[in-house]
Length: 192
Image (cartoon, rainbow, N blue to C red; front, top):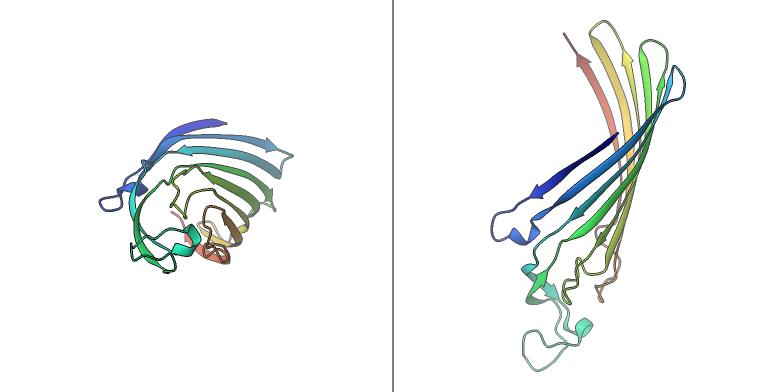
């Protein structure tokens, strides 16, 4: 299964530098491994471009050896600087989902998705995006069980971990956008 499209995200001023657009491609291999087991393998790619534009950043002068506020020294911290930023990036997602039919009324799905992104900013003061690489892993599972002719119960959950590397930020002390989180799902559906 192959698909494609075009992504277009636009913000109003003063956040127009966050606009992203570009082509999307995806491919999936759907395999029936017997009457009750199915394996889906998928790959998605996006090449998203942005027009560099000025944004306000807070930078530490010692990290760049520059006098951003023109006060004669390079020792000030959190100096307001207007500098170009570029949100352009390439993004890849690789996933696998395993589905089991557990009798006539229940289905179990287990899935895993790995995402990695490379930001292509070359702007010297763009500490958020220059030399940025990140990856995210997500594991999930869901059980659907028919309780009656029109009533279904869904139980599920997921675990996600994201790690970033912003090599273009000389003052980085760990990464605030690293995270791990878990989600749980409980649902009851009634259909006519």
